[in-house]
Image (cartoon, rainbow, N blue to C red; front, side):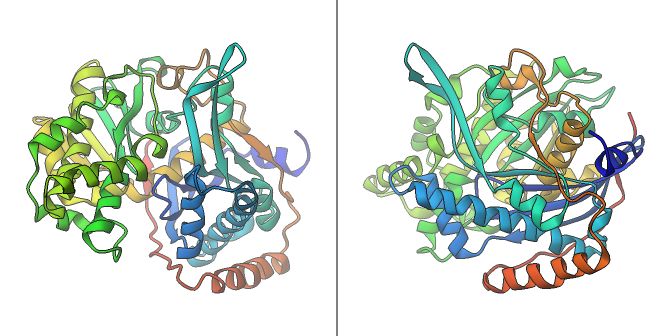
Length: 435
């Protein structure tokens, strides 16, 4: 590379925005971080919920029975606009000049993931699809954007997931303490960092369902009024049905050895609905069904630790939406004693920000040509550099254009999605010392 972009990359410290919309499809998590010799510093973070209309489009595209290729084509560009607007709005709200951001890393929105592959002739081909057009992000912001991280790992023989272990290693490895970084999003995934580990010592995989079954049953429990069980309060009113829990624990995915990954295709609406109907035929109260699927997430996580980690960790660091479900966290503490189970916030990084920060770290590695998958986690044949780079208008964003982008595009776009609400922006100090 040469020109303005090369000059940016030559800086000792880069300011990078990270973007993430997970399997729960609640909205866009956006983070701005500074990455340099002293580590990673979180400058600003916010969550921008999807409008109901956008969320409904995403869920239609999740389901092969309702997805249409024209809708998928359209949604790819719609989500590109949504992600771009998230960066612009975060910059405005946090007082960070848009032109001070050197790079964007966008995970996009996964709509389908087939890690087990499908037959094509005499071969089995794995595949994955994330949407949220990065060309739109780069064009609207003027900032070079790295996106579409997962396909390169699949091309190298991996499952394309999990990808965050690289960032977990950067942020949370410790010379004396063994740690498990447990994300509980729609799907739950763990990164095991043995004390004093190197990159090759990492064990990471999807443990199974996270919030997606809980969210689905919460809709039944509230007659569609709530999309999730806030704080786990509804589950706390029910009793865990041990018979149903034992049946759920026999799911074949849980017995598969890592590397492995899963998604909505396995534990999404169809599976949750089948479990719900079976439980209702047995006349189980809805509160008990919700309590049981909540316990299922906790027990499947603990079971995965006992089966597949080299040893039980000293500390379990929780992040993702499930970290705010007090009933779920209570089950995890019971299942994982004597390990210390604590939210990521206690370790210096807000749990809500972690996924977005991870993709900022991955993008930073990509533009420096550093391999950023973890083959022991994904099953890839070798370390590779992930992502595709879309160049921005490096050095060409003047104050007038920046003002137009922020006050014009972002305002008009979000007025068209009136039921989208923005969270509170918070500034944070260093979250990881160097080394």
